Length: 591
Image (spheres, rainbow, N blue to C red):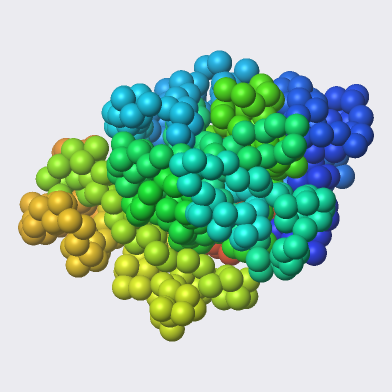
């Protein structure tokens, strides 16, 4: 059965649908609190939204059914929390950390008071302070890795659009005259007497410069970097700084980062940093969060930020205020409290979503830590450090081909849409070898949101195939994890002491120590359960189970095992009939 994380949701999350978009959500959240949405600036709108959303993790518009807005009825964050409470699964992140994530999933205008934020104002912060901040950043990243080994840090970059002529004047600025007037609109250009002889730039003549770089997790720490823009009565001015090798060293030693539209943002930093007087900068590896979503099986129509926020976290998202009235070039300390909160939420959003996605993919590809760590002869943390690096190597420089993502109808087609880029920035004709390898190890066990028959042996047996596949996908520094051989002793451990599936014949006499094995009890009735879904009722169901000599739970699980395509129909009936839902609730997780 092909496992996916989030399918397309027709009629709600759609490019042509206005039922769920940022404006409608923000308006509903504010009006639901008895407030009004007027022609407000970003700061006022942000304050109203945060005040209105503070009372609830999720404010769901009344005109949209909950199962349409959150297709599984429960945000994926909470599904992950439940899954990682099981005793036989991965221990990173811990239940305590996930509980903290859940408690802090929403927006809070006092967030900046609880997060350690260090700021670098380019051209103002001293070299010594930059070195201290660099060391602090490394410690914070290591703390994040101790919580959940991943090897990627969330990044959020806010650009400022200016005419290319402004950027050229910045490049030509001298120490004697370092200040350059900035124009952020065509009207400003027309009114500027010094620029009156210049041709008004076309759409292609505008460029973006990195006004504000934010890196961290927002949950406990964040580093803010802003460029030297000052505001006076006459407008905005860029004061070209003297190069600082400490700042260049910090940027060149950034960790691998993950974010939204990261490729364009990284290119923007690297291409404009020399002209802005910062110096020559080459950032480390980067990953697009959309790439990881596609790797997990997240279909196109549910990929808008507002959709992802509800489905993953269960929280509304305000994107309307994040231009900050065109003042995001301000240092973090100078921003109003509400805009600080929204900026930090943007960073937290990337941090939480990226890690939850990797956990979901982990659940599907390497679901059994006992087998994987036994085969690799290591502890969980070392194995998951390799797993994070494997995701990083797989997703780096790989991007979804939009046309193929939109038309994809299966998990295989989704993975096929991930391509590297050629010299002309066009998609290559086939997926990279690591994506091909991922195709061979996905969809063999249940995902967190789409099930199948959950036989423990299948997950453990499939781990042997995954081990062989990953052995061919070397990651520098971790090749020793795949040096081992699959011996008979290892196979016995994988199969709980059995030499093969045939030894699980229920007709075989039980061994005195059979309680340690995964045997079927001889008294287990195996008569097939057949239910007419067109005439489904509780009385009919109980009658069928009685004739088959099954208890309710036992019989329904046997029916689910042999009727996988009908399980979705059963859940749909449960949504409409609370009596049946209550009866089935105890076996929801196994189904």
